[in-house]
Image (cartoon, rainbow, N blue to C red):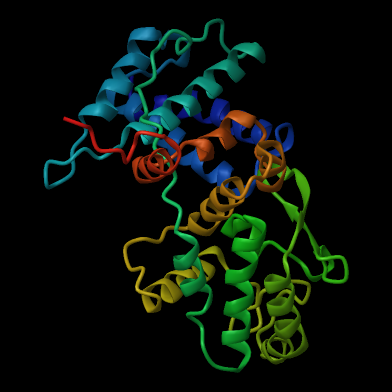
Length: 320
């Protein structure tokens, strides 16, 4: 069976599945893109292996695909896919086959019994409170861009927002009088997030001055967007991430930053100061409490510090 026939057999199923994800599950564009990438890789592997008829794909085929992901190496001999990436890829394959089964498009789900690789659940690498203060103070000067950038950093930390959620904010989502912002999260789920004084002050300064200047740019394309780029259009995820990373470099945090760092830091610091975990779950927009519980894990350093301050014999020298 040729590769063209394989493409013809798989393409309609993948198209129907993509429509279901978008319409029935209401997945955001970024999530849809991730599913599409994983399934395109799966389909390409099926073509290369000659599995032309989707109805003949069995458990051994899916298991072989997982083993191929595990064995894949880059030019330097390092694994191409981390365990978390393999687990995500298998989750996409399972979701696809389950959809085909439930819709009557296929008679069996060949992925049901295929085991997923164990993914170590590490502690999110939050910044210390002092490091966050340094980061928030790393955008000096006046003018529209510094005002915007300070507002971005303060809002990410104050509300625990994802960068994609931040750049999706519209002016109408913000209520500075009550210190609240409406956020559209994963799966098109809305939540209302409070903002502290630091974020409200930075946003007010940006709205009163910096955003007005940016909005005067000739190429403005989205007048409703809260955060604008230098051309007057809506700021992109990549643009916002560059702003965060640039501030981190100036604060001496090079190599410590990644897109969710302020979100992780917000959750960790709130729990450190006694916030109820269910409140933090609501703030972050987690569907499951187990997702939030990862922030309750303590680092070895913190565990040692608490132990030494609380245990009656932690610092007591033994008598001879």
